[in-house]
Image (cartoon, rainbow, N blue to C red; front, side):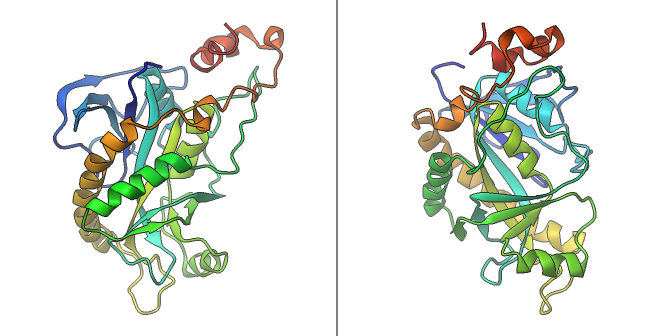
Length: 288
């Protein structure tokens, strides 16, 4: 990684581009884990080097389950990204988190079933710490930037990652709410797991678009309602990212950026040649 802080931005539903980027270039990458969602857009915004990727692809071509998060995160690391801000549309599971509000989450709960969510295996084993899945320094920095925009930003919360692409049943929504989760979405936990393995600090801006279907005073979630709120949220998300970037660029490396230091369990001589080639981007720092 370079001395300059390069910030990755992963755009969710509705956020397919970053306005105001200069010196832009599309970078198409092939990875050991397949093809990313789209070409990576590199450039500068508010004086900071940025790598942007719409996780669903431009034109929203990929379901949450179809997103190749391993390729997306590998590509971010390959391009020198050390910190990722992920923007995600979510359903609110709390009365006080209204559609249009943002939540700077600090925890996840996993309800996915069909997704590769590790770079390791097949010849090399690693166990990274993940008790605190969000980089707290990065999260707090984005929270501080939120003071500059006209949107309510909630400090902390648990993101339940469901599989999708269907929305919840009423029974599921009520049970999830009884568990004490704060928002529900379909994408970010897989990214967070992989970002930790890739030694990239990661934080989520969760943008509430609806009350899922638990709230008796509101209609069950519909695509039409989600899109209306989303249009408003995306503008605020762009403002928040622009305000946060100079602050993020001043952050020192966090513990997330050395997550593999004591995590690789396989003896160097026991790592298969195929695994060493596939994982070189991560292993070479420790096992050159």
